Length: 175
Length: 116
Image 1 (tube, rainbow over the protein chains, first blue to last red):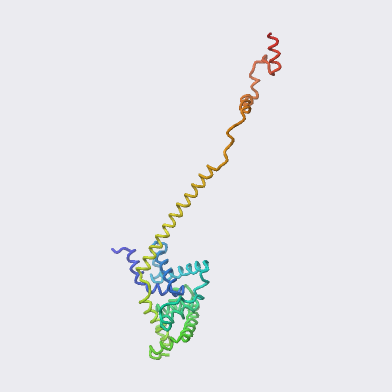
Image 2 (cartoon, each protein chain N blue to C red):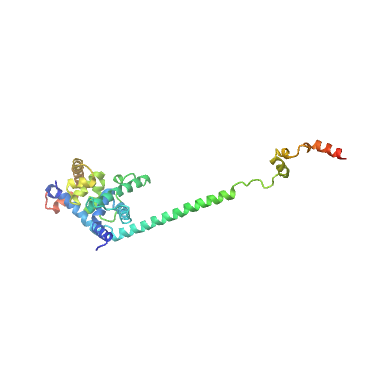
């Protein structure tokens, strides 16, 4: 018989990459995402957050991450470190500015939170808009509005940074 | 609606694919994040214990300080007060005396003169 605690840890380890990306979609940058994920794991493995099987493990885990990200942002706001990650300029990195992943990260950071989250769930996690709406606990209609606006704005931002053209060439000019 | 079936979004899917690849190479490992969570958890527990001890210590210290610094009552009462206390303690004691006994000090003096 397997130890349920070890089993949970193994499943969470498998979802780690997706969890990290989701945490970043919630807070805006990699450093904060790691802090949020660390706090999330602390909550789960100390028993402060418990999986009761009402939803899939991934949906539950993403919910815990989303709430932890909200707490993290509230604390950051209270400390006046910054007002919001949405207005926060991404930290300078050693990566080249024309790096595709860097451009999409910057573009995502510039999106409003809800749009960023829904676009992330659909394109990164391959969820449908309906599933993303359930994950964010919002109505499908609202999710569709955020999805359409987010997609439009993201395209504009990527066009500005020149990534869209590169992506079009890479996919054989589908647009 | 499934985004995967929407060909118009191929450009965005491609951009996100690049992001995924970047994350695979650069995201912090599970072991590292888990270890940091454990360290933070232990630090939080330690802070709680230290806080509890500090609170108990502060309460004990406050009691000791109160006991030591409280103003003490006067330790040298007036002797005269103590001397009259037994008499004052029995204000109706004269009622127990025989009716022929002198009640006042002047009567007691008269009694003495008579006995001479």
